[in-house]
Length: 338
Image 1 (cartoon, one colour):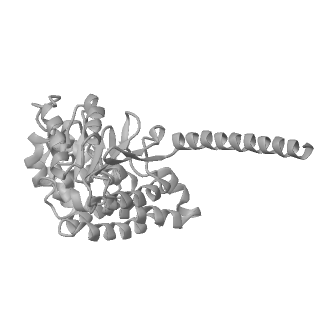
Image 2 (tube, one colour; image 1 turned 180 degrees about the vertical axis):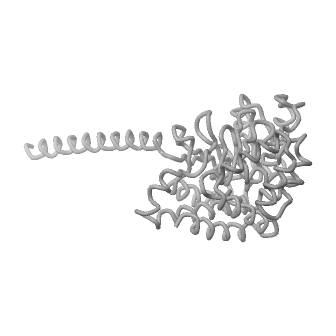
Image 3 (cartoon, rainbow, N blue to C red; image 1 turned 60 degrees about the horizontal axis):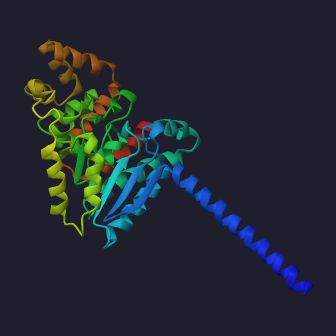
């Protein structure tokens, strides 16, 4: 009887201890999930990827890439997943780019990490482009550099009045990578060359008008749009496109506003048709208009080496496939950094 009591007490104690351990683990899991840099969730008919570093404008790091890529591939093959949504946490940014601070800090101390970052980021860019499931990026807020790579190669890109697009790499001694050499020269006229060399920022509906976004939605309707997409029942690509088009059509914000660069496009096409950076600079000087001189001032602040690399990158990329461009850009990235 005494032994049974001891066993019973021990059992209850172990059970209680086990319960506490489980509860503690669940609390930790909950905390870890809340603090996770990227959230990967199945919701309704979709796989939802949330970049979860709002304090850092959802800047992309290697750990995030290594979590997103295999999940994207898994959902791509899952018959119960009909679409994939990519979005950023918070109101300020979709993704402001790669985490430059971490990359620069590791260039000398951990070069392999830097190599892995670029290689795996570009692999993810290519996976988004070739994704077999409809891929929707909600590019609300700041969308620059690496954030462009996570969105522009997808089938659907939804901008809002708070979207801010830019490829500012020539200012930091780099070039507009993540497939910039593919999508930028394919924008209207020489717009992509202008955006790449000057780092010019497009805001709101201009992101759609430029061809970077496929749809434009009022930011206050973004949550409703997502709910409607998640509620679809075994949707086809056309069903998804219909929902996006409905919201796009109903959006009235800046509907009648002309494209910010519209009055300058003829000149931009002329200036940036030159085959060298020197000729572009000469074109701007000869024009002498306030807009031309403003762009000249901007270009003169950029890294001269980056300007030359970027112009050549876009000229080469205009006739290459995306995988070919990403291979080229990986080699360029390593040459620029090391």
